[in-house]
Length: 218
Image (cartoon, rainbow, N blue to C red):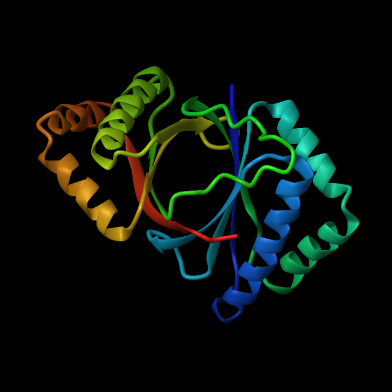
């Protein structure tokens, strides 16, 4: 049972470059101290200018808690994180924990191993349904993810909210470029099976949104 901890924050647009530098340094320290993967993201479309996403991965909740404790023990890193919060951010940090329903286990790599290389872009689909529809919603999300994975030729991840609002399912698929994202969408729209999936979604009265995020190199 793997988990994804997602933090979304907004910074002043004119301080975005400096905030990214701080976030990259913090991510490097986090990975060195925990061995767990972490990905930094910024929106291309679907979110406000100045938004930053920090996404941490762990094979279980105990590993995630231990990683947070290990990072907190680094006093200089903690001071740098406090500086980022105090000087750069606008408003509170949104935090959400997700359980991985379909995807890798995100176990830590060997000591000294380089962090995993993220895709350049990620297409993210978030959907919410009524209570009592979660089983069908997750089954539908998995079917959609398999379709996207087939046309994108990239692995997909399906997660569901472990904390926070009921009931949310998220599909994330890596993309090499914006043109790859556009081509994937075109192929999906032409796939004859997509109409059946959309009818299932309509029956659930699902609502949601789509994001295109770009990973930040570090």
